[in-house]
Amino acid sequence: MIQLLHLPPWLCGLIIVGTIVALAVAGLPIFQWLTKGRLRLTEEMNNDIIFFASAIAVFYSLTVGLIAVVLQQRGRDRFRPSRDDRMHLSRM
Image (cartoon, rainbow, N blue to C red):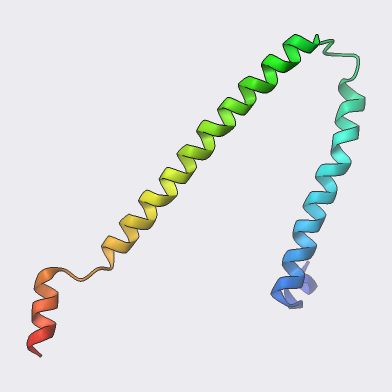
């Protein structure tokens, strides 16, 4: 693992992301094989579950996006000099 840090950053990132994607793609058929006969969902139930999961994902992504915007604005306001500081600097 330490040797991975000695690589250029773009190559290190490519290896890490590639490994995660490869594990995710390999895990899909394994998960399907393990759950094939156990759940016995009808097509209608499957569509309802997919719709519900998609709705949760949309609201989650909107929430995370709004949190990111608020934190960025809060950080920008924190490092903005106040009016008194600007007046003091202009007199110098």
